Length: 476
Image 1 (spheres, rainbow, N blue to C red):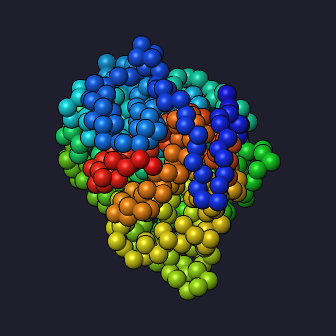
Image 2 (image 1 turned 135 degrees about the vertical axis):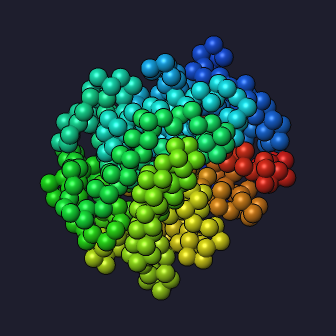
């Protein structure tokens, strides 16, 4: 089993030119599994692939869309039945485990089709139920195994010093791990009107999320979570006996780790706190609509209001040139850092995640700064420019950051055209989106099977087909 940090050297080298390089013409044969080998089949998704593909003039872009958009269904879904109800275990790709974050994001691109596709509804019902069981098993875990009586086989997690339970693959506490299941549940209900998944088990998992967020406000001590790992990378463990860096309790929620699975420098990860506010408000709406549970709704709204107030008081900082921006991490004592990480939630993705209005001046300044040398993890090479992060290292761009920029600049045709070219040129001839690519040589990339990134790429092209159809009629 590969490590999430393993650099894969497969693929084709791309020739560098003074401008962004153009890849050699790949063999445009579908990279999808044979129909009989596909894990999950949706007729609605197949029709959507055909519909959107007809709108994409560029041969390589069309080929990549056909490979990437169905990748989660083709390769990562394991359907079953638990207690007579659908169960869906959705692995992240090249690691045989379900991440709460990844699995939620992986199935998002098909939500608009679920109302009229019973098979897709069964998938969502099964995943929402599976995630509820995972949260009840351990709300501090980020990744889970298919079998609840199994012990992790992830080589890097075998000797972690934390309360490791059977059924848990990895136990890194990340705020967004509990936000994404709320977002999935809310958006599924909005898309379909289906209340089937929202049983007593789901309600208990929602109350567990609220309890965990409150524990990690740490108003009455450090709380129950601690994590230590023996590693030559400081981003893999938490300081101060596993409780993480010190903080002042100000109402924000602590996160041990970022969505990248890297340890936080300061424990209040601001993008994830924004995401918590947005999803807690959605939980409040959902609790009334599907459970008529006023107590749950009121608790969710009260916590969202408290965290939102703390973000207003502690969530900003000033850059050296005087610009006020949203901070990446703070500690409540007045210390803050500015950077951005390609993983979502990030500062750059807050509009995509419906955490801020896209026209908000504070966020506009923040996103512009994140896409500049004010961000130590932004870089520009001969082939691609964008945001990376410490997870893989300097000089590596995550295509995910380009996709997020595409969603937030969907009115800027010039920027979108450049993004599509870079995405097309950074696949190393594989027809898929990778975790990270070398800014000068995309043949050096990490993760050849990363379903979340593939799905996001497909989602972007669906979005552009709706809002910028003329752009997709161009040949790159």
